Amino acid sequence: MGLYLDTSCLLKLFFPEPESATVARKSPQKSMSSFPRLAHLELRVQIQGRVAGGTLSAKSATALLSVVDRTLAESPTKSRKHPAMSTRRSRPTPALGRSVHCRTLDRLHLAAMEALGLRRLLTNDEIQGRAAKAAVSR
Image 1 (spheres, rainbow, N blue to C red):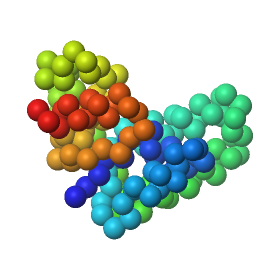
Image 2: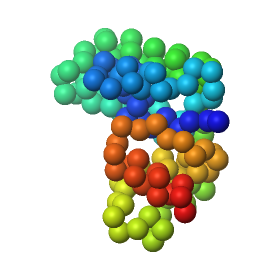
Image 3: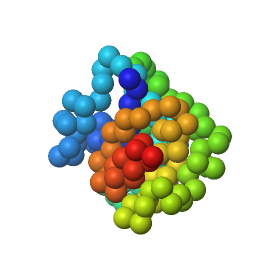
Image 4: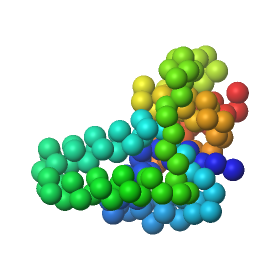
């Protein structure tokens, strides 16, 4: 069964953070992990943001981006085009309920997950996790 990797988890695979070991352990090594190119773009933007914020040098960022591109091109990780119809699916729906609110990019990720036929999400974003559970249960 495939697993959708959210950008919050992808980042932890490349930057040492408290949850990095857990994400690495939960990321399947034998089954396919999927993420749309939107997540890859977000990952690159986050790296560039760290350069702009002074927490990462431009030279380190360039080297890291090479590692990111190489790693994400390898199996079992599979980069997929963002499904064209997912923007239609990402519109707010009453089915998520009043207690679940989700930001725009998170909605696009959830819609891509649905369009790709995936029902499992690995995220460190509690709000997105709740929205994913609500979307999968409807």
